[in-house]
Length: 318
Image 1 (tube, rainbow, N blue to C red):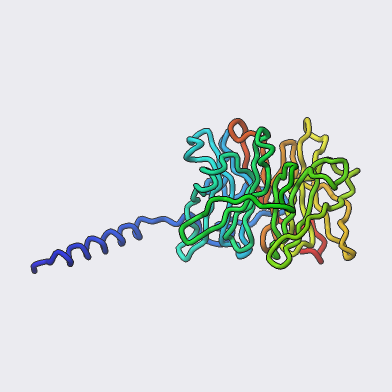
Image 2 (image 1 turned 60 degrees about the vertical axis):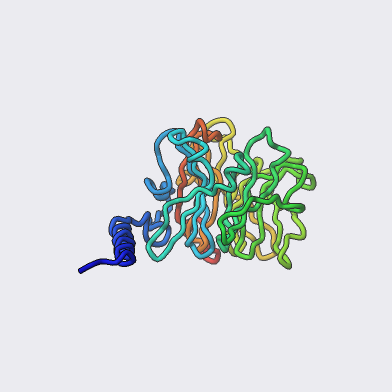
């Protein structure tokens, strides 16, 4: 049989696709990247897939979209070139399984000091701030949107989400209301506290600080709001375990709209290291957070942890 040129090309394409499919191995399969759900004691999330537990490797700020099919996180490692390996990464759940984490280059290239990513409920926007203290004047909140051509150049968000004071971390409820930390004027003692900006008519018209009984906790920050805004986790300074470590606390929204006295989540979650960047899973079943031995990804180590919330919440809040 004599093969035509077109038939040969078609055969080569078919064989190439078949080879790729035969040798392609899914990154992970199943909800929460196929991980066995944790109990009431925190465990490293997706070791070997997301969290690399070697020294001087940093993964942090894990956050899922509302449907649980997109996961965003920070990765930085001395084992990789910062220009190649450091930044925000995205993995998505497809019919073939979870994709290998992909670097968001538009954020890395335009804002090398980007920090604290938070994924929007629809998975099509990433909100973040700037980490470096020397760039304090630029520590506003930014948004990077997904387009048909990939992730766009990030844009700074104007007032009331940004101000002359540094903004530090945020999380987003299912209705797109944003909770964030800020040292802006209007809060008690002029220090970092938690603010809430409700999403109204496709925008955020105002931001108000959340009263959390500041005599009980030191410098509350890092809010992780539940999807339905019924409770919130955050970090605050504690005197346990060393100079200014941060623990994770829980507060409940009460029927009158105020917040309950913050409660330290205890030793099954908090340790002598630094716990920060808490996020609530879209089904409210799990708390994700970061545990690190310092704040500099170039020198210190960090891993993403998760823990079941059932034992930490009243039944009506689960």
